[in-house]
Length: 494
Ligand SMILES: [Ca+2]
Ligand SMILES: [Ca+2]
Image (cartoon, rainbow, N blue to C red; front, side, top):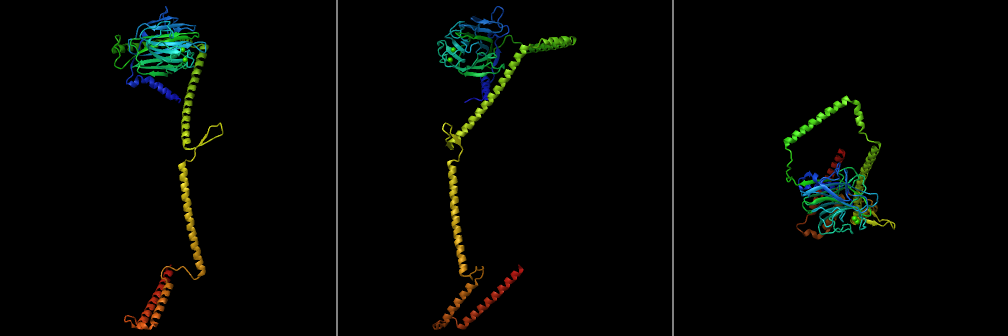
């Protein structure tokens, strides 16, 4: 998966600070001029480079060291005179490898070894079977795997002969595929060895921003010889590039609290005094400048004319400016593209998840199957269950309605057969009561007419019975009258 640009930058930043900061405190840094060279006046008039010695086909000028020129079969090297006196270090290498060919050869090597190498050795211009570290900027693809230019590190214990046939790939500690040839700006490598961790950051020379570094590799638990020598070597073959070193800047790194005491260190009072002197001098200079400008207003203009650039310079500057702007825009676009790719991947992931639960619909032959979001099985089952329940309920309602209908019909039929039949009002059931009374009376009449019934001593006499009936009738009549009267009164009230 592609790493988003921000993540990559963050990673570079973390790694670059990680080596130092994440261990606790940042190491003390001290520039080591005896292990460095830089322009201007890189080489002195006699051609020597202070604290360094070079040989083979290497040429030093005021601006750079051409370790191997763009001629066939050249070899050269430059080695520091004194071994290091510090354990941990960082080397910033600013270099240019340029040639007219589409492909160049052979490459450049950075060395940190227990002994100085040769000036015309077999490994990128220096010695094989070295003890220590070699970092190779290999331009030419010897093993024809289309993986050059390549940057790699090999740590050797003095026993391994460089594997030229495989471009050292069988021996490498780590590496990265980076193009370092023919760049608009100088390419840079920052090699840091601190607390047994080796880190290589690379600047591809596409911008003039000094901090545009990219991580090439980081390796832990690396043990390099103490008091080693720094060196640079280069070689050309059938094809040839110019191999120029512009800056070799060494900084020693000291864990906090372990900075060696500097004998030439100035005291704080002295520092303050010098600072004050410097400020006074600056002030005086400014005053004099102002005075001069007041006295010579015309010369001021003339003087500034010298600062103006020529047309060519301006054009070149504008081209560079335009290019760097284009580069910025491109980088921005690249970042956005990365973002989009990331989002697309997320969306695709989601779609495939849905696809696993959903239905895969086959498209036309030759087309990608189209994934459609559909209802899942359990959802279908739930819907079917609900439908069944609704159907059952509807059926029940239907049967109930049928019952109601049949009952209504039977009622209507009953009414048609017996038109007098009416829904009785709630309350006293006169009719049934009267029927009961009639039946009772008939029974009584029968009993009365029966002659044998007089025998029983507990039986009522006819007179008493008639009297009882009479009283009952009167009570009923009175009650009926009273009720009617009451109902009439109630109706009036409403
Ligand atoms: Ca090679
Ligand atoms: Ca190769």
